[in-house]
Length: 632
Image (cartoon, rainbow, N blue to C red; front, side, top):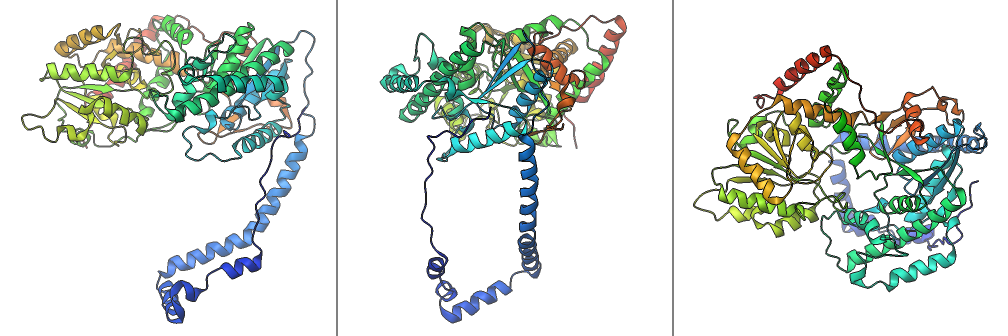
């Protein structure tokens, strides 16, 4: 049932001025403009403004004054009807004895993109006879993944979040409980005392009841500050302690909830951020299966992970590897090739487009002093604050800047080789400043006083608007630390050297380094051969794009994405018959996976020889579009 508002919330009452006090405190026109003469000059200046601006401004202001009461009235009436409808029964399908029980913990339901998917799928599971339980967060964490890098946090952030979360749950007819229902006051006090008792050098690897809570929240702290390295200064330690408290409370509450509710599956967002990670670890401790979800790589889609966080990739990568020998059908190949082309223009993405393609690639290259026929290697860095906390990353180079250090040292030894280093556009200003401090060669002023010769590498900073794809098309080799651009370059048949154990490490279309020395060995070999384009590499990369990225995107016509964090249902929430089995293939696939009726990753079946020939012909046609940078 819906629960009442938490009693511990208090509101500040502010004294306001009366209308007469406002009138007395309001400055007179003469005071503002310097007496009657100044006031006449002020009016004359106002009248000298362009007549069109003045008229348009007055019309808009008048229209706003007329329309606002009517719009507000009708909005109130519509919301009243909608609120009353939310209290009506949603025609539930009662679960039978032995029905699977699905528990969902949704601490970030204010992100309506994710909660609309989440709650719709829960209702779909209920329509299929499953028992469902929804648990929401009621402000248990002093710091939260909803508010990364906020300069000034609103004092009522948790109040606003709970209000919006409650509204979202009501609008989608989802009964819920607060997680504090499963946390004793004594547990809250003990956890707060535990966090306070930690010494500064104990925070990073903090453990409670044998659980590595410090490791669980590390990714959220990195993302909170948008840093690939934490100095653990007083500010960072304060935020780290806040996340520790929230994660410990979540683990305690979800462990109690799992013991009481005895679920078959925990349905969870993300699994990477602090609170979902703690809930996932509680499920793992109790041997409960988890299914995590995140936004897909294209709009209006969702992806699933079974017993893995969204930042993990072992199962999905292995499934894509098993399918990599099987050719794609014509429609699959067309979809994968379109994805490669759409990324260049920021089309059909499920995240911010970092740049827009520039029409004149030759002019783009010229801005960096490169001619279209020059041979050079392109270095693509990664925006690593979201994955740096994963234990299987940075296995060969302890940090990404050490990889860049090795490349710059190699450049010094090979003066005839040319490189362009393109820093990821999503690199935060703090991370860019750190890289410049560690690698002074990256600074622009480092080359100002160099008289003998220019360096054989060019640096494109994160804030540059230069088109990355102009350099990718012209480069002979691409060096990457794990960014998606490495897969895109391989799709063009480029030689790609990969330095980190990322989501496409070890696949046949890239040369994967096993150590810093091995990376330099691969770089030496490639600099001598300079193979411009390999159709076999392109074929394997395009297949991987389909198997790893696109086939795992599940679409549903029941959800419409409005913006980056907003989505709305496209079905009647008061009449859930459209959520029944057989009505929507996407919802059927998701619910079947959660109920354990089908695997998360499907292996593509073998195809006949005609499909192989068609794939080869279509790939050749695709590659002809990228033979050389276009000249316009």
